Image 1 (cartoon, rainbow, N blue to C red):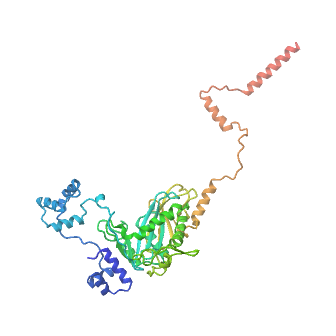
Image 2 (image 1 turned 90 degrees about the vertical axis):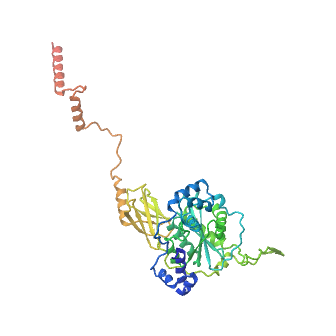
Length: 460
């Protein structure tokens, strides 16, 4: 049975021109086995046993005993389960305890401080070390996830800022780092991050193995609780935090990426790097006359320029990036420093933005998965506004419909009740209202009769 790590290594060696016989001797495997995995006839991973697990009936008891005492000896526990009916040998029992990870983790007993250490020599072009560092309080408001990749021999480091640490963003960021480094090394050293390493088995994730095959690299996993196996990139994390992050003035993630690239290509590559740093003590500066003689060490950049790296594929690994965005009042969503149009009437809605790495398109989807917009991908950080003719026409129609072509109303003009209002008022009052009604013809007759009577009194 091939593990995922052996499968990745076999494909990496095949891309470097190794023969199947050479790979078989290197991995101590049969040539037919190597050929079957290289040509896809078999896939790595554990095989399901045909018989039931003999430890399964005792699992609940073992967990309860570990709750009582996490440090109980396996031999003492074996005596107890044997008395309960367990029939296998002690080596089988201990192996099943480890494979099922039944013993709980104890942080106090897992510390590595105080352990003896020794510098590890890294040949040129042999290894790249990878690590994330996370900063929650970024100038642009969101959490900053920065992936660093360091050449173990020269110390050259490059970084990419991502919106997440999930596997698609990791793969996209790794491609960006390697293209900034100018190539890849034979090995990738990582800690036990769940996006690369299966926590249950400690082997390469099945979903990540094709990525390593795509770039022709072998994944080297640090042993548990041995983080100092990748001290070069951990030193780069400390260096970037103190020299770059604390004084960062960028307000967007795109500006921060430009600043990070400038920092590593200038300040980072200008660091002195002793070619014999593993055995010789560092030389001291001395003053001769008016000049200070610096040690004749190469810089990180000079040493990295001579380091042989493997070429990268023309296209990055085709992973799909998905992020959520809130629609602005101008019917747009943002992605990597550019804005893209959506249909009008969706202001404030949360939409899904999807991009397939290696393509030149970007899709905007609703929560139900319906594609409501497809655009060409703009160059990251250019501030470009990309809109489709359909979205532009619909937005213009919606905006113009809210305007009126008439002149403003005269709010001081006299406007008494009209005929419809008076008729309705009369209907309401006639049904029991208190208003006084008046017959104008009768009033005129009364006035005429009064004038006639007054005239007769004056004549007499």
